[in-house]
Amino acid sequence: MDFDLTAEQLDVVSMCREFAESEIAPNAERWDAQSEFPLETIKKLGELGLLGLPFPEKYGGSGADTLTYALAVMEIGRCDASVGITMAAHVSLGAMPFYLFGSEEQKERFLVPLARGEKLWAFGLTEPQAGSDAGATKTRAELRDDRWTINGTKCFITNAGTPISGGVTITAVTGEGDGRRPEISNLIVPQATAGYVQAKPYKKMGWRASDTRELTFENAAVPEDHLLGPRGRGLKQFLDILDGGRISVGALSVGLAQACFDAAARYAKERHQFGQPISKFQAIKFSLVDMATELELARSAVLKAAWLKDNGRDFATAAAMAKLYSGELSRRCANAAVQIHGGYGFMDEYAVSRYWRDCKINEIGEGTNEIQRMVIARQLGL
Image (cartoon, rainbow, N blue to C red):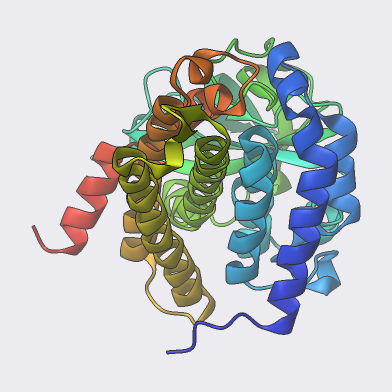
């Protein structure tokens, strides 16, 4: 087993770290406090090729593998989870369906500007009554005169309402199905489509600088050729997309956990009590050691899932395990970091307060912890 990164991967890590520390970290507190979407910074991510990292150059991407992409998300997420999820949701959920399931014409029309970072794209699966049970989709699309007429609501959707959002790909019921489940298909809905409305951003506990909204479709009509992939394959396609998305959310969780460790270790060396740095006390040392040990395990789990995907292996179980473990780890690390900071950790001027708020969604998005355990149990034959 070779754990060494290639020269190209090390270059991407270095570039992302330098950019994140110079462009993202100094502004993250302000973006969070003001719930400000960092538009110019996101545009710079596109200019660096990070919004198209895992896509071939022929489609405007950087031609990197999944492992490199996971490393990049870790570095960006380490400085701000909001920027990290904007990048991860755009790549793994917004653009990836076009690459995996789109026709050549759809790839040229939609994927190329997304991979170049000229536009962001959203992924519309969750509904008010269809969260973990994604197959319970109520949004409907009827084919009338060569156009799909869509009616329904999506919720908790990332990247749908930014100044550079290009549109959303949604699941919708398009027929009766086999009697057990309705026929669900994927439809491409460009931003300017009449009847497609983005609500105001949610007021959130964390990820405040990312764009998250409810979407409504009131007789929103798109051409028949805006069907993405075969009719009736929508749910299967999006479940496949979620498997890959779990790698990116796992990477985001590792980045946030690393930020928690870095802040806690730095503060423990600076803070003096009883005549010495608190890092000298065994309780603090052990807490930091536990964080560092679990971080190593979580990082390895995420990168293994990415490696399996890159090598054409079955990666669904590994991705679910990595996402589950790293998400729970980010919470443990955030809690430990706040505890080490003591009263100061409760104050928003210290970054660990933001980390603590940002980490919880890692146990919910891309499938809750409970859903991950169900996925893993099924794969284990339980």
